[in-house]
Image (tube, rainbow, N blue to C red; front, side, top):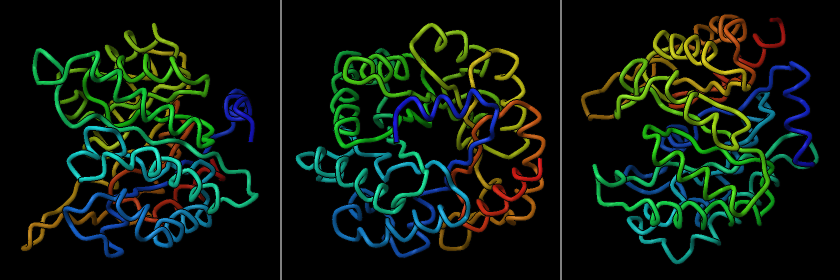
Length: 294
């Protein structure tokens, strides 16, 4: 699938369906708590394939690779630093295999590095750019159709990630922030500020993912739409989690309840919709079906 096809489809005004959650679904399917999802890219690829095929069957037109934590910093913590290129390449291959010959875009998932940038943390800007460059290059070389720099919270780090990506690829770039303080990130960034800064960089799509409740994410969507003319990527959590007696998070919002919100997301300006934590293939099916009737 050509790079331009993704941006061309967005320009038509057609709502595109992204996939659901990777981490929470893999945990529900047996990934041991504390084990990096990327470990299963190597050891249990059939489980990655099964989840991705389930998302496609549910209606996903965009698959995020299982590479959320496949940057040098996070892989080092998981003891997988030397396998960065292998993991990113293999994850793209698995997503492509799941898609087969269907018109599904493969989006290379890129997360925050896991530690704050200076002066608030130990990571220098040059170090962040180097780390992001390595992953972006691996995903691009592996054949991803676009890059999704997601769950960001710090403007300096997001900017470093975009700068890194643009040094190694001309792929479309999505930058998505997580407003985990309602309509602000943990660093105090609101959607308007995010848009005003990121629009100055070579970004194709701005987005919102993860965050808090559907209501809070919707408020963030409204503010972001007012602040930018760029297409908007919208992947909220399946509501707020409840913590059980074992300390595990459970997302109890039903697929029907999530699907009922879709028309408001589209009306508010979301061009690409899906779900983050807690969003199962059943939730995504409800989202996709609701989008078809909106």
